[in-house]
Image 1 (cartoon, rainbow, N blue to C red):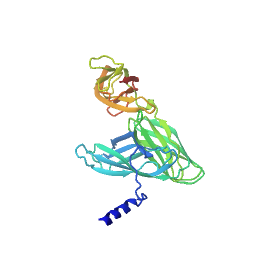
Image 2: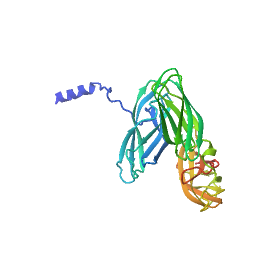
Image 3: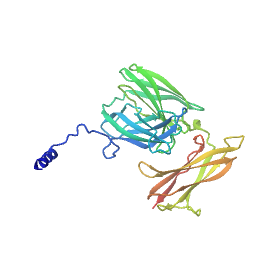
Image 4: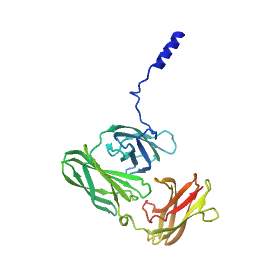
Length: 354
């Protein structure tokens, strides 16, 4: 018995090496690379595959990272076990210090039964910083029935291989969601070159702009934020006005109580119908509630489907129950059933919750 106890004591006194136990997890206190959950978006493409897009952030101010591994679990509405598990990575091979990169991961099969997806960060490696030796800029942006874009890539004084130009489209929410990542492969490019490139095709109709950036085996570019001109997105046929927060009796409130149900109400005026034959315009009315702060946090998103008959004014109402105290501002939108904005954003409303 004494021999056993002595053996255990010796084992406890021997230091345990952690040289082979390195791992990364989504722990905000230690993790330098994180998922930006507010940028995430899930959709089914034209071929029936489910696509998850979003943004990965490198929060380290000193080091760049590479080999970022992302896992997506695809689910239906019935089984808690995933239908598919797919591994992927970011669009950029290297993410600079305090930098970011979008990702786009597609299901392995075109399965209409997939209705949900969860994203987790598996790991990453430290990396040497790539020099800012690429420059990209646009020469033409046009959106009609399809999207057309032309740009130029300029290289510094070294040969580049595996040159990729990326366009990450985003919507009008704040913070925006990444809707799609398109990639143009330019292959090998000589030093001190100027290469033209273009992209034509269908994009998500909610896109209001895109980030343009490039990377090669040795160089990277800055992110360029390019807006799609509003006049080219759609003709705004609806005006939002008189946004208010009311109680159940219709009284306008200047401050709210935590846990009390209120109605976010606004008026919409439609000037002409989308379908001239039926005189009808189907729409979706959106409300976004954000907590005021340096980085506004989206507290609530609600929506209501409706149908305008002819022209004139209607009233939309969305219920909201504040869950915590703070200063909030309300945003309102009207989109058609193809998710195209048919109104300018409604007027801001500030509200205090106590």
